[in-house]
Length: 511
Image 1 (cartoon, rainbow, N blue to C red):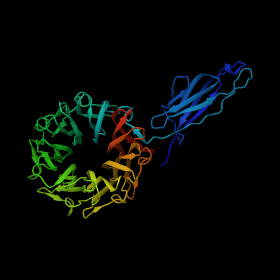
Image 2: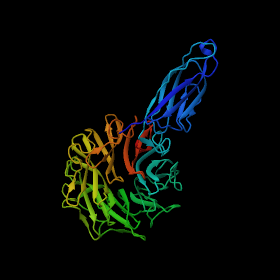
Image 3: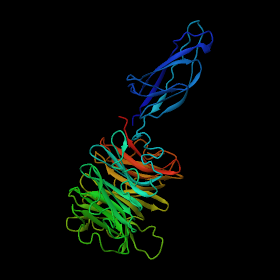
């Protein structure tokens, strides 16, 4: 990738009449800020030690006046470039009776930043959340380019569901969605949310809530002016009405109605339940889709809609064992609704070792690709104490890997601890994948994309400090694609070593 740099050229013109002492010399410093293509950069900030910062004009020119003889520290910064500081300048002179000698030109190079904040402070301090403790972010981007982020957090002494939207210049709430009690605004603990948007670009949020005294699944949606329930979906028993429901996952069908899947323990065993809103009431999708039990522990569902408007659900399945531990037993299962029944996508996709067919598989995430076929990514532990990110996609005949994505060290390929993957399809119909990576005592956010033949980084996004690139613990990423076709990543960050903040950055290529 081509790297651009800011070139700071200092042309020191001694315009004052100097005395016969060097301390009588004063100069006007002028220069030009350009990139490596010699294009002028307007709005760059140039700061000379002891002087007010100045800004470059439309031609990239700056001026600092009345600078006495001496040694100074100069710095320069511009949005999208790495700030360079602590450059030392020492002015020089000679005595002619009326003139001081020009100082040699000083060049400073600033590296181009590809992963950028979205609004000042979106990846520092408390990020966009502004709460004492925030976690479990989810992200969607509508067709107008508005970035919508939801999370659960502790702002008013209780855990509630919060949401903000980027309007192009600032992060804004929607009718109190990021202050007070947020969207949930109740007395219980609200957590483990899932976010989706409809064709109008309006968000809906489902979450796990214990306000009623039991764990239920609640949901609200934005109607353009307020957050509304759908048939008592955020009070009492919510849409689950079972008392032991968790881990909701939400999608919007082709009619604009929400579908929710979750893990339910009402039968005495965790099973995956599904309901949809039909415009009037919450109903099962096929008899028994939200009732009954089974013989396995089924958790962490992920939901997507195929090209026919039918739901597909993947989940983590663990056989019921008589003895602990359960390590080495999890598999990834998947089924789809064909209009009349819930069926396996392939023989064995929801039995035996499922589609993972490996040692210990957890936390699946599901999307459909441009052909409408499912793509599943998950955390896998093929070797003790090493977890990796694995992926398989259905090609209509078989479950296939992409560039070794489900063998050995998978996509992450770090031989460390990779976890909580999130997946999205970009405008070129290539897969983009983000995950958390534990590196000894540090944890960072990594990302790779499929380029048609291999998994590649985007400007060191899967090495070193990755996207987060800070000294605090970064975890639980979610990824989306902006209207320019580039990834946007949100995550939880232990800001200031004390509070969990919601951080977000987007990729801006150097073109």
